[in-house]
Image (tube, helix red, strand yellow):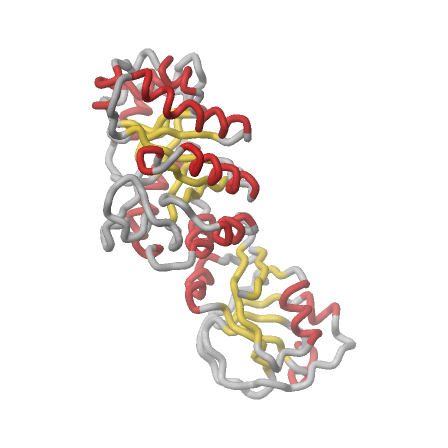
Length: 361
């Protein structure tokens, strides 16, 4: 099951503000919360008191809190990998190991009596996971997540991201990656040049980042890394269908009411006999074969254009298409709109027989 998540950083905020943000995210169907325990000031009781109120509030909303922790914090709090009662008492869903142990410790942790999830980093493409697997972990309690990168140009390349993630997917391990809010103002560190896993996402709209991660079919959980995302951003993410690509589009004024209905209301799938030039969705030409489709706006075609064949194309009239390449227009094809430029690259992730929809930006 695909999930959406937020991040909170109690060291940089207040309990009241964090709870308000959690409540807002819950309103829009978010299920995960990422937080950090990377630096510790004060004693163990203080840490418990500061975190417990927020975690209890999240648990009451049936949200899952994952706490990021470094091995040095284990030592500082007097926690051992074979005794995770501290986190059991804290009420968290799981712990993310900011840095690993030797493999055996991680495996042992997955058998903890509190059924805590043990989350490990995914972004380094080493034999780390294979080493853990050699020690026979409890797979249902082992999950993975990528890192996030506040430094511009330091985020993962797409090819490296795929290589790393496939290491986890081949074992059936749940995966997570981070996206960045353009409205959020802070993260765990002073640098705030966006906070995402993939560098290519840094300046993209937040919903486009999430659509891309889900479209790869490699990521199970998408988490906003910085805080606080706006309500509008949370709302946009909440309507994403992780099983079906939805393209943000603009429609032209020349588009008829019937053409508009076809684009926005009819179900679409990528016909299986694939063309280099077009994604074809053909059911509308069958349903509306008795209707008129007069020639309207027929300029030359560009990649990302949304097309509906007009009556000059005979039996093809009413067929919806998306242009994959630039083409000459014979005048038989109405150009009714186009995919927003930030999302044209998502066409590469739509496969034959894949379902898709459109949403006016």
